[in-house]
Length: 533
Image (cartoon, rainbow, N blue to C red; front, top):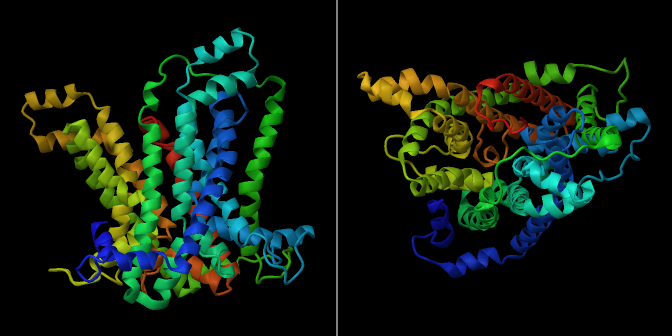
């Protein structure tokens, strides 16, 4: 991050704030800045509208199927943004196979209504609603049932109790959820890339990508300036979220969790929740699957035209997609494996530090994840473009992608392990030490077996996050080192939408399979590691 700031304000080795300001005040930059703020703000509003009711229903009521509803609502967060954008593109376009089967497809030549500002805002809402859901549910689960029961005993209806007791207590969480959704919108690349770039609606991440793709490393000072601007927006949102979260744990604690009985509205609430899930998840996924099953755009899906040729092409015959699957599996697996091994000693060392030092270290670890991926990619280019002692230049190699993954997803691997380490009784290691066991033996025989499930869970979270990743690798990939997200984006840009749909469906199947495996593994994990439980 320091290297990025230096490249922005002192590209030639001398401080030049005037040139930095001129780069930020260009017309294209100002337009992209406004569009970034606009879509991120209204996308956060949409995410609150979708995620908040689900959080209330699942955390506070007896709505049927709460666990499966929470799991399904979290799926968009686990699926790559470009896959989400692709599914909605194939749902509403004039070549929509699904709408064509129903006779509802728009006229040929009609612009896809999901393209542009409104579509980006809508999909920001869908993609980031799980963030709102997880944040609010954490707060709602802490509200003591005594407060709700006292309000009801005083004659207040459930709606009034919700508005006058629950929501005021939830203000810090509401602010934190909105800030996180806004930050996610600021740094999102996959959705505006597929929905905005075709109609020249550029946000800051897509402006960086287009200029970098057009002019290469020669425009790095300009890219660094834009990256600092995006990072500033994102970190301001993170600071707001942290400020809102600072004292929230002390406001209320203890007691039986609050619950509302829906009564005769129980079934109606469940039906409405399932309709929303169908609209934001099931229909787009069906559109993606049906597109992958036709031989070409415009061909109706029937028993005669249905084919698996697109899957065979991208999985067994197309060199670039096969290489991308292999690269994504290897890079994601390597990052997951290395982090699973590395975070255990890091968590043990951090446990011995004071609270202040822990916060500083945790902030440093969180920084590459908090800033948008496009910012981290520019920082990696600046850091590894010039040859380094012993290793040379890592630019245009697979190693730079792996290092970026290690930086970005370190915090995902560390969080469950630190939770598990904090729950290990000190008596165990003290007893082993008194029996003569050294530090290494205590680590191998006591700590590692106890925290191994959490480390595996963190590794799976890293693998899922890195497997479909596009924002970082969009600027770091090179010939022969394509990742799955890059190839999917390239296929859609090249007009090979059926092949792109097949790649997306295959990636979704892998992610869902890993999520199911994680869910089966849940009983061996510390509480709070899996957000849908």
